Length: 342
Image (cartoon, rainbow, N blue to C red; front, side, top):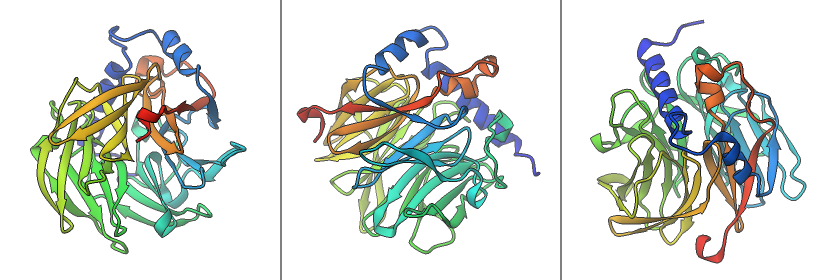
């Protein structure tokens, strides 16, 4: 098996250090026990796998949920109403490794997934890929459709959005780049590249969450820098990139999901789910629910936000390698009040 380039391993290790801080390992956040107690006050669904480490979650209009597993690999499907869960995309399918971002595109009947080789950090996920890739699976059957590698040997596919014309966009966390894949294309193009997407320290976690706003523009988060940015979109082309000013500093902003009226659900890796409202070049972030242990993503079904809890310190922190996370891994249902759901 071909080994990973040193720059890629350096990036992964840098991300690990960022995640340690996000979970309060340096002592600035609440204790693990207190965080778990807060999170367990809401309804939850278990995720199969003793090393699942759920990293992303997406949904379809019928209420089905799909959860990507960073540790064990593969994608779990959760049926609506019954909450029956099962492995939908098998670990190693299409050569996949650790699954990060997932996105259900019902228009094309495609379940998109970011796959990265984290075997050097101990990920048990099977698969043959050594490069970062975007996978396409059939949304009905889970069968593989196609696989497209991200350009370069030092790439990291993180999260996904799809526009109204079916083009797919991914945040590239190892580089200050948003990539676009046109329908049927076999290679990515650079959609937007800007120094504003860069992390404060070279090699650490940069671009992360991505979603289209109701204004047609693209919004992204940067994990380590704690920024929310807008990429203007006109006639299918990227325009000005703007760092939005907020009512407070975001703490490790991760997944971003549109609510309409230029508002979003936002995950903060420090433990919270927020509603973010954007007006002009500013945003206001309002906490909805706190106390998760490294929340990683969110999906909306009706007036319920489903949050995936990653417990990623047990994956990334070498000192915890021989310790067990709280099992089973879970996703949590957070009911949204009227003022938070639009």
